[in-house]
Image (cartoon, rainbow, N blue to C red; front, side, top):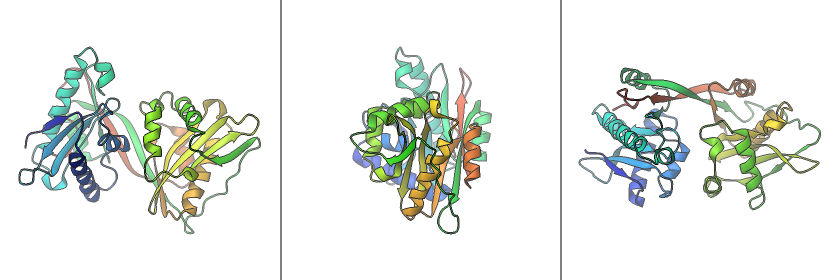
Length: 320
């Protein structure tokens, strides 16, 4: 089972990886592949490198997959039925070779998530086995992303939304609000390694997703000049809701707008029949953590980003 490296996937290959993601999610829970990486499966312009390991008996099935994106941390996963056979290490070696090759080229800063001889890789769920393997091979944890959840419905009533004077809430309007929302997102996440870099294409890809509902993208607008101050983009799939993106203009902070738009979005999810809501929040974002804890969100799991530095031997944290 030798890994193959591709810069784009055929429909059948993308479907096989998506089936692998589903099997891993069923076995491990959570989200074994990020949304950005899932979208890149069917986007030949994403700039990502895809590493596939096919099953010996059924070559159309994928039992190991890794992705090195243009920006951000790499990811990999192994079929639950094929673990402890060295597949994770095989995928890791390919990722490291790709990263080392990219950093030695003149265009590495624009084409790889590895810069300055480093490779960063996500371990979803904070697996103890992944942490042990990472430490043994020279990877260090550099970032934590907490996954938090809370119930919705009559058993978990929400506080009322109290909108401050001078602010009005409305829904996103396709064809009108794209530019203002992207500008707000860039200001709110100016220091964020992924979110603040969204482009027109990134936004268009999300607006085209089957789960997108403009009623679930809440905007807080200044009544005087119509300026966009804050937003909360929710996602609802079946009975599962998500606090997808919350953005507050730095110039409007201190007015409680984060709580206002978060609550407005949660009320929307509640009204659509979602039984629960989930979110991801940076582990070092103390103000956001306090807000979510006060709104009843409890810690479910933690994703950890590990980084390999310089010429240190490395292991991508994965079961394999």
